View 1 (cartoon, rainbow, N blue to C red):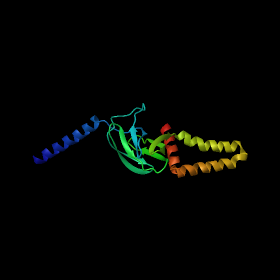
View 2: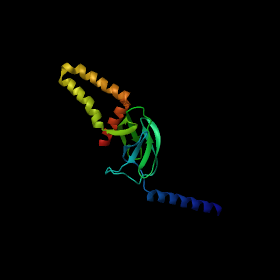
View 3: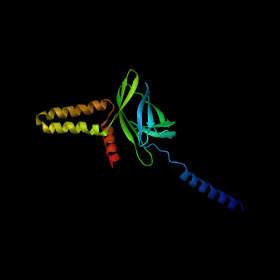
Length: 179
């Protein structure tokens, strides 16, 4: 008799758990944007497909910021992320969930103790080196200058926080989101 009560209780719990999984919505961040907040922090704002703030996002979510794992607490679709930057820099934000891996590359411009983030499209990341290579092919006499400018482009981006790995990962994430 005692075992029968445990088995019935176990089936009831399993049924209640399965029912709760179908009733409760799956809250995930499918896209986000970064906005300035104060001198050392930026807002990570969850957005929906219409680029509007998704206020239903609440709880903790894991983000990868320049390769480091950071857990952000969202309240009404907004989380505060502290960035310790000494100068303007590239910052790569990535979030992984069950269905997609939204990622964005930002150039965070630091001036007057303020952080002003600008989103960098992967189209621009591809256009600059390809444009320099095409100019080098079009004008064979200035191919040396094009190579110099390409190397300078990567050097200055690397010293500003944009590594070749982050550059390639951002481009591949953009291409993956097309398909």
